[in-house]
Amino acid sequence: MAGASAYPVRVDAALDKPLSRWLWLVKWVLVIPHYVVLPFLWLAFAVLSVVAFFAILFTGRYPRGIFEFNVGVLRWTWRVQYYAIGGFGTDRYPPFTLSEVPGYPAHLDVEYPDRLSRGLVLIKWWLLAIPQYLIVGLFTGSGMWYAWQSAGVHSSWGGVGLIGILTLIAAVILLVTGQYPRQIFDFVLGLNRWVLRVAAYAGLMTDQYPPFRLDMGGHEPTGTLTVPPASAPPGQETAPWHPGQAGPGEPGPGPSDRGPAAGPSGWTAGRIISAVIGAVLVVCSLGLLGGGAGALWATTAHRHGGYVDLGTQSYRTTGHALASRQFEVYTATERWDVARSLFGTVHLRITSVPGGAPVFAGIAPSVAADHYLSGVAYATVTGITGGHPSYARHAGGAPAILPAQARIWAVKATGPGTQTLTWPVADGRWTLVAMNADGSAPVSVRVNVAATLPALPWVATGLLIAGVVFLAAGALLIAFPVLGASRERAAPASS
Image (cartoon, rainbow, N blue to C red; front, side, top):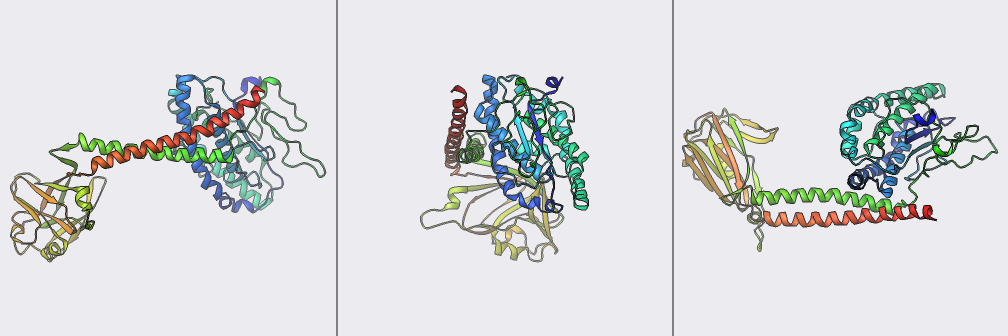
């Protein structure tokens, strides 16, 4: 009966006695160093899980070194949560290690699977786990655990969900009475156990679906991973704890109940740092490769007549003119015109909406444009949010002279239909102005921007090369510690 209820993810914890009445008030501050480290560990967890995904898909096996690392991240996170906002069950500070710590009152182990389904790995972490994600969302706070899984960062499941509410109630009772309510402790442990089972299932560590069952209490119902009392009587030493060992007075598990030795024995601090740095480099490489691929696509497929299309947007004002914000171009040096190298020639196509009405467009030095628009009712485009422009509106009347007659424009175009401005980028502070050719109001135009971007092919090449270098370096920094940890794990087994 016990064997039938066993689940390969085993979570245990012992309630420390006595607990400080007030320490829980500052634990969230004390664990800040852990919250600095854990996001990087979870980033490595996410990257290594992708590697494990393909390993399972092609071989049916979860690489042992990666498995031990990922279990260690879960174990580390569980200890921090139990100490702080996910339990408040101990005052002993969580150790900075992935390994099992027998003397610490919170324990986690996952039984290593000899084989995993190569087909199930394609759907279990997203499709099959959806019902579990909904339940875990209630336990941890709406969307919090899902965001943690998606982003690959540390979990904060003791937040505003059911677990956080119950632990806060227990902490207030502890503050008043000096006692942690046992019933709340058992219930909170059951909720955390459920969350961790789902986390391991979503992390591809087991094919066994998490049971829809709340196993409450500090000990697993099967007797595995039981922990000794938090403290021994005076003068009596507590025997070291290890997975599968029963506490004093408890029946020991049979041979079939014993899990594998817990703890990533081969994961030294240096290997952990190497894997984390490698994961960071791999993530950075994805950004570089994506940027390089996008730049390469723009250089080829998105280039028309020598210009790269940068987008189209419509603008409208009840006034007599539309003006851009001032844009500064101060990049020329004696040997290299940076602006001309980066942007080349800018191509602006301005169309009156509805089409057919004569339109004017011009680019002028900002000081001259401000002087021309002084006293005119116009709008300055301040930004675009969600595809909708925002404006700063200026009161005034009609312009004193028609825009085409003003002698301020570096480049200008006027007439019916679509007007094209071709502007070789130059140093200075500039303003783009669009108006009706007769200076009337309102003004409604559609503007398309394109540029030659002569440096874009070089930018694309540089990004792609950097992405490949980062990816290779990250892969090596991950592979060496994973292989080293796997070899050290296998060496005792073979001897």
